[in-house]
Length: 458
Image (cartoon, rainbow, N blue to C red; front, side):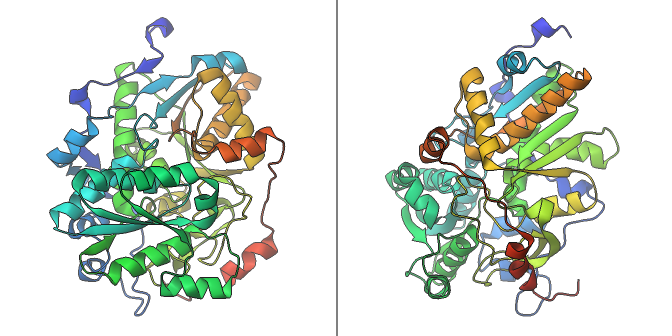
C-alpha cells in the first residue's frame, strides 16, 4: 500500500463500531488469579460481589471463558455519539523527529468527558439503571473517570457520588465543576463523611489522598446505602472488557490499510486504557498468530509494574475491598503530592499483571518532567494538548522512534492517546514555569507498603 494513500486520520464507518466486546481472558492459558474475600481468603462468589457491584457486571467480572460478549443496543447507540474514534498518522511528529518510524495514535479524547473512560462509564451506568438502582458511587484520581461517569449517570437519570483524590480536587477545580454540572456530588478524599475517611485522616493528618483512600470511601457509601452500587473506572476485568472497543477499532483501521504494528504502547495506572488498546493484538499473540512488542508505561513516582511485588493485596487503603493478585506497591502507598497526573493507583489490573508476569508484555517507568517535555513537543507539532496520563505513552513512543532514527529501522509504532489535557493546566503551568520536579521513591519509601502486604498462601 502506497504511503500517500494512508490518510492523516483513519475513520471507520459508523456501521463498523464493534458490536461485541473482546474478553482477552478467554485466550489466556494462565487466567488471572481470583479475587479473595478479605475475611475468609476464599475466592469471592458472585453473591458476595453482588453486594458491591451490579449483577451483570459481576457476571462479566468472573467470566474467563467467553471470548466475545454482545454490547447492548442502548450502549451501541450511545457509542455512536463519539465513536468510532480516529486513528491518526502522526506525520508531523515523524517529520519533527526525522525518524523512519511510522507513528500512529488512537485518539480517545474527542468526547465531552475528554477521555476513553466514557467507554466503560456508559456501560456500567446502563447496567445499574437496568437493575433498577438509585445511583452509584465511585472514586476518581485526576478526574477523567468521575467526569465520564457523571455524564453517563446524567444520561440514565442516576445519582452519582464521586470521591475525588484530595490533591486532584484542589489542583483541578474545572474538572470537578464539570462533574457537578452533570449532577454528581464531588467530595475530596479522604474526607470526614465516612468512617474509613475519618480513620485515614486520623492516621495520616494532612494527607493529599490516594485512589486507595477514595475507593475505600466510595465502597463504604455504596454498601451502606440501599439502592446503590460501587463502580470502578479501571483495574477490574469488566472495565478492560468494555475498553476493548479501543483496540478492536484500532486493529480494524490498521487492517484496512494492511498495516501491522511492531510496537504498541499505552500508559498504565490501573490498566483500563492499556488493556483496551492491546486486547485484540494480545489475543493474536496468545493464540500464536502474530507477535507484537507491547509496552506499558507508568510514572516513576508510582511504579507498580517496574518496582512492585506480584502478590495478593487490598485494592483500597481502608482494607475493606477484596484482595487481588497484582503488581502492587502496597495498599498504604500514597504517591508524592508533586505527581501531576493520574496513574496513581498502588496496583495494577489482575489481567495485565498475569500477562506481564508471563512475559507477554514489558513495562517502563518515566519521570514527569520528561513526560511533560514529550507532551509539549507533541502539542506543538500535532495540535492536540494531551492529558498528562497519555503523555507517558507519548514519551516512550518518541523514545522508540528516536531509536529507529539511530538504527535506520522502519518500525510501525501505535500508542494510545487516552484524552486531552485542557483541565490539567496547573500541571502545565508548573512545567512551563520550571517549577515541576521529579520524585522517585527510594527502596526505603516502598518497603513499608511491602511489609504490610497481607499474608496469603496462594
